[in-house]
Length: 355
Picture: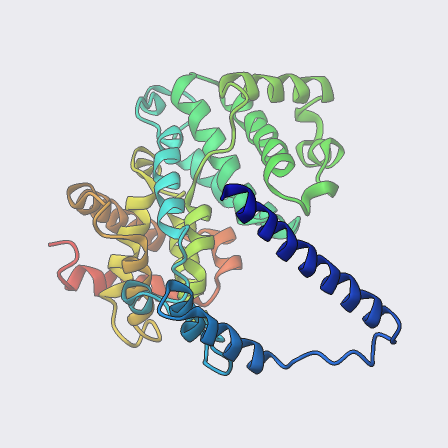
């Protein structure tokens, strides 16, 4: 019985093979274009009829000809609700970038400060150097990034070493050269020859290189510090008005004039600056919404409110310092905004910012 079944299967298989060979020979004799193919619709109907009540029948119904696909490609990917309510500058990396800056800015703090023990270098001498370096930044077309870094290197050196006034001036020249090398792509023309020309006979080339090596050793060759310029680059696109941008930039520059702010984190200083500008009168700035959006974008949950209140008081003293002194470099860079700073101080003191 088994042999008969096997013989019958062999006969059926051989017959199917002969039919396949006959169809192949018949088709090969014709050209490729003359061979007619059944349309896709007829093939789907044939598959559907042969499927019966099976799983393939469901698949044939699902992928039938002419039925639209379940997953359609849209022109723009729909955003979640949280992304729709956020600002257009808030990307998926913004929060991580701010957290990285707040973690990195710990290296820029000056916690142990021996500046009060200096015998020859005092606060007026430092203010003269700050204002003079700001003039050099405008003359040599340097970026504010290089100016912030040069002043940070000077303050870090003054916090650890008791130096003479002559060496203090030499450290200023060296920090300017070092910061222009590391932070400014346009400062290729600011080389050692220009620094020697600015210094005159008070500095020699070998001494300049030795001081540069000393500054690098002092910071363990890690001079990629985070300062206010890093936050300014991220917050400036949110501020729409050019007038508000100039005022915010000037306020950030003025923080360097007041040395007591070096012990506070840059994120809290920026947050407090935005808080002051947010409470200003409409005659001083174009609109307060720019600073409110920038402050919200910076993040309120990761900011210490107690430290911000202390920073705000020091910013009030900083505004008094600028009002009582006429800094030439600051007035040359911001000739119109300096008068607004005086009105800004009166408006801030009259309000509830310092209360």
